[in-house]
Image 1 (cartoon, rainbow, N blue to C red):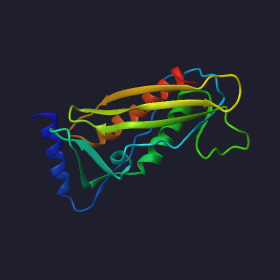
Image 2: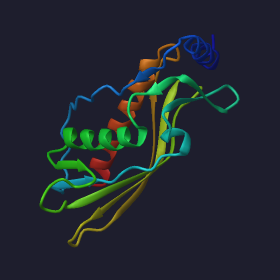
Image 3: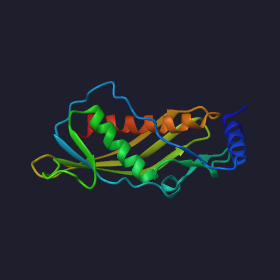
Image 4: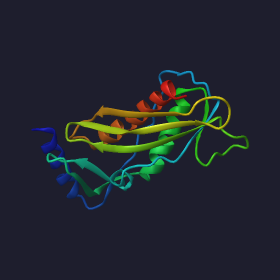
Length: 184
């Protein structure tokens, strides 16, 4: 059975249930510490494509179209989930004090991270893909602004919906590591 047929079958089977099922991102466990040059980092609220900012979980079908099932939902608001997940991952992977906006501390952050997604989707090829651009802006000082594009893919099992949430969580962790290594 191809991945797209398996995914379509899973969507149809999930539609048979009466109550919606919500999927949360598993917490990331950082295995490495990445040195960064900032001590305090604010993560701005991310921007997502419309389909990715909705509560429904969208999938790419065999034709490349985006489909969802009203019975399959994200457990949290996707924009909040991406933003908080990125802040948590950056904090776990660096020694910096990291928080999502609004900045909760009395002093100002040293830098702000702004991420704009152009893609965040479970593809019909068995990969959850995120792509877009991130920006790092120092609050003050002589450091230069950073603007870089990213494209990340994490595998998932088309017959296991929690694996899509796990792949999304890993992709956010990968993005945090990329930002820490190349932007901070």
